[in-house]
Image 1 (spheres, rainbow, N blue to C red):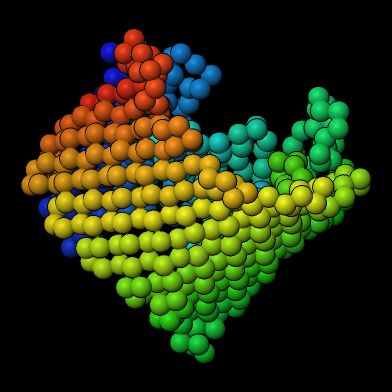
Image 2 (cartoon, rainbow, N blue to C red):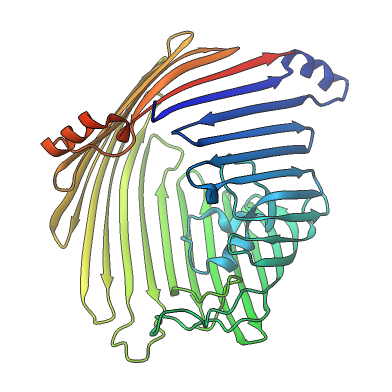
Length: 460
């Protein structure tokens, strides 16, 4: 079968023994093994083991039709070390994407560190990270997806409800020269090569005891400088307050034209302003609104206008134990380098209901560009989980402007010790036209993916 997939998983846990070991001061060992085989020539697997603060992961991805996509990685982590595939957090993310976040982003509350990536997917970063327990200080190095090596050190002090109150980062990178680009008239300057240095800092002050909620204000940013690069900077000013009546977040960011990321690339944005507000975030009815303005960098002196984008959005959500209704809309206005404006609007409604082991959701929306309707969509999904079983179905129809369909059906025997079932999914949208129907009739496996999966759990 051209598009048949087989998935298998094995999880070993110690629930009974775990309680006994926990009482004796010992921690149980857990092991999970999962694998999947897809269309001809594709296979992936993962082994994930954990004990106390120790974790081990092994990931193997094979595509025999495209050997260049093969990937193998093994990693290990403890309270003081992470080695193998790594994920960045905090200032690591900011220096690579200055002004790339809105007021509600979690990046401003993250600890600045590298941690073990346990996902069953290809990780672009591999390296080693050694830290003092608690991440108060750490040092390490890694290679990214562009084969650029980065060496870094971080500090994180004074833990708060919204992350460390003081974080610092120093990084040394050596991205290649981009002067050999085939582009004759690039939109941005090209990095000339050599070592790049980044020094970043984030500080925030909590005011929880004064306001009765969770309040913080802070600043974060970084300087870039190097052998062939002038000193330049970016910074973020952010504030947030959350209590029973409101959740408000504010952000302003500014980046110099000469700032360089550790990958040797210039930023796309010059100024970002963002604000979001939720009323009664813990109540059944939650009105919310947000606004974000982005001013783009312009490196060509002959540009008449500095392009910018303004996005306004808002809506209301109603939530109970069984019912959830959400209505929201947004409007985006963009100005290009010639001073011309373009508008885009969207509307969306979501209805969700669940009772016992059954659930139904309807999600519909529409998009307009310059007051012209461009697309409509509706997604219906339902699921039921009677004792020992699990069923689900999803159907999506989208008009662009012609109707295209996609969907998925799955059914499984679901017991504590065994999960076994199958699913059928449209691999690519199907348009109900004669040409498409003839194509699927002649070669159905170009559109349909059938999967069979099994997972076994054993307790000792």
